Length: 455
Picture 1 (spheres, rainbow, N blue to C red):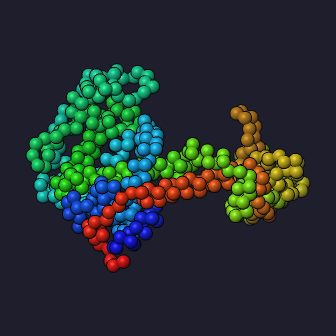
Picture 2: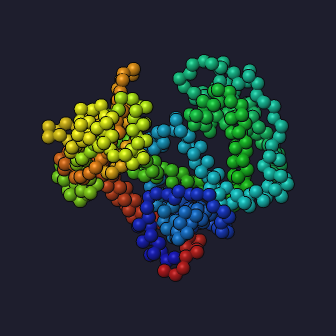
Picture 3: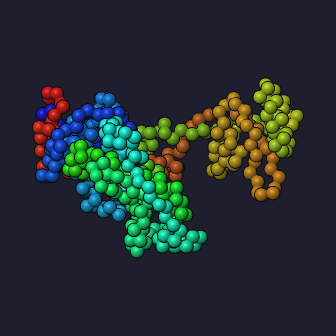
């Protein structure tokens, strides 16, 4: 690929990363430590580009290598800016509840390498042991209650914080959960501290609850992860594995920055920046957005409906069965409904989304607005406090008229201001990416252009 074409791809590179599913064996990786690009003098290795491209093709067979390279370069620049602007504490604010940043990146690295090269790894392990990973494990005596007490304290105590202090971790590091033989010779081990450092809040709960089976499973997972990384370093070199880990770290930091902007994989999560931008949206912008997106504000204006009110669930189920058998709704309302409108066949007439006085619909009206025309509802118990008698309702919407939310309503203002704020946040990120790419010194090597046809 010629540099001009690559620069065009860079200019349009999205500042997101691929969702990577498991794939089978990939193509031949690049030579160890071969450089695909230099970004302000720092190398991006071809191994990372090839691995990322292979994973991208699992999601989209038409994914282009040039687009993958452009994405990795853009992410490298954006991740550095994200750490500079926000700091890791703000980017990864949820790590006291979730997994720590380093743990998440390590897990992604192991999963990526296993997805790409797992078949080859397993083949090498079978040649070595004839069995598999279990053959590497060595008998290890279980930890005693006294040893666990030294780390977690006595069981049953009320705890507000399930994290371990330095003294507890130092003690836990002396307690071996699992020993294993290294394929190249020697012995390794997984300590209780190794397991504790890699847990989210649910995992810490299990550790403090002394769930020994959980500890052993986590230790075995760490042995498996160790083997994946050890095999990959021996196969591709430590520099290649470290560079791929940095690519994944870049991806995580960019996604975290997008979340701070109210974008990305969870647009319903809170965003202070989005709140600030939404507060800057004025009435004229809201009106313009409403004019462009009016169909997004369709609502049910009114419905013409009937209902049957029954004294209890038994009666409601009996009438519902008759309706399911084809009985006439109005006739059953006259015969069984305990509502004042029973004589009129349970007719409610037209029910409006808002009354002329501006009051909001009651619970029965809200039930009507959820029903499709011509379909009898299931029996629904009306709201009532504990221990109070509550009748049951069956409703039928005969006709529904749709309209639009008022342009000056609070609902329109909220939706429009949030949507416009997201547009502004996305524009800020796009401008930031373009500015970083303009200022950066990007050199594409021969290894970076490998695998592309003529421009």
